[in-house]
Image (tube, helix red, strand yellow):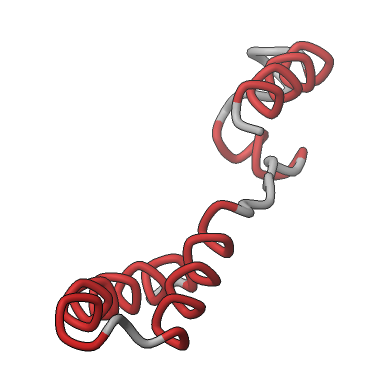
Length: 82
C-alpha cells in the first residue's frame, strides 16, 4: 500500500466521524485537525520524473524522442500539475 492509499483510507474512515460528531456534540477538534492534515498531505504531491535509464527502458530514448524534447514535455506537465 502506498502512502497516498493509506492517507485516503484514513480519510475515508475519519470523514463519517466528523459528520456524526458535529451532529451529536459539536464535533471533536482532533478529528477536524486530522482530516485537514490528511487533505493537506494528499495535496502536496512531489513530481517524480523518469530517469534516462527508465526512458531507455521504455523505448523512448535514444531512438525515439530526444531527451531535450522529453524534458520540455515534462516541464509543461509539471506546470499543469502544480
